[in-house]
Image (cartoon, rainbow, N blue to C red):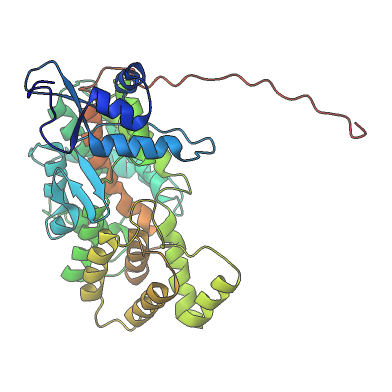
Length: 408
């Protein structure tokens, strides 16, 4: 083997080495590449394929793990990376960006720094549609309404240019937030230069709030803007693979986000804190442990020791509500869980505390998840650089089993 055919270092493997490590033939290795399960790169000679050892080891682990019907798909992305030490946005630790306005972080995800503007008439149309809904309409239903109304007003929504997708993303976020009814006494003036977090605060809580409390809300938006290929992000990428417009891509993401297993765990934390405030932390936690009930906001599929999103948001929540007596309930319960439950707290725990202390409803966390639109837009743009219609699962038909008579 020549020097050019040799991997540049221990982190790269030749096709022969990769196939041997996986225990498959080279043809199978090439099939993994063609199906998008595995990525490769060329060596300096431009002919030899090299494979990242970490990718090979991850695939080997996945192949040996019982999946119980689980479908595994590998999607290459440069937008966000989820590591046990914390997730990154294009190589920058997300936790280090919490003091940046959410709008700047969204621009960073998109690699586009256009202005955050939307015609006032569009906001008026969205607000008029929102007024037709019952007062107790869930936030995600209102978000879908805002996205659909905005889509109907954008005559150029099918323009596939990345800049158009970014502009549509800004308009969706602004329309969703600005078109919501105000909950508190402070009504933002038309044209007032509020950040998205400041504007959202007036729509999700009746509390006046402080700068530090709104900073905590902004941090929540930043930390939730993207997180690898989550279920909602995968749904958005599937929509993008058929070259859907950006509004349809976001609608696909919202549909998956509405599921009770994605984006709703903070509601259960909110309820847990309410119980702990009324009955005492030890009593509530002890009752749940005795019943073998799952504790919300604890454990994560990726973070085995620490979720940096939780600690980053926790620190800002403490600053924002340092003089609030309810903070003791949150801190006490957090400490008890750290001592008694053998799993790390995740971001949903801090998010539930934020919504509880801020006077939002128990479903307030969904309003903060609206920042995921930024991630879906970024993934949609990236998916447009891939071959269209690349997600082609094969269905296996299973005939219905005839019902047997009871005496059979």
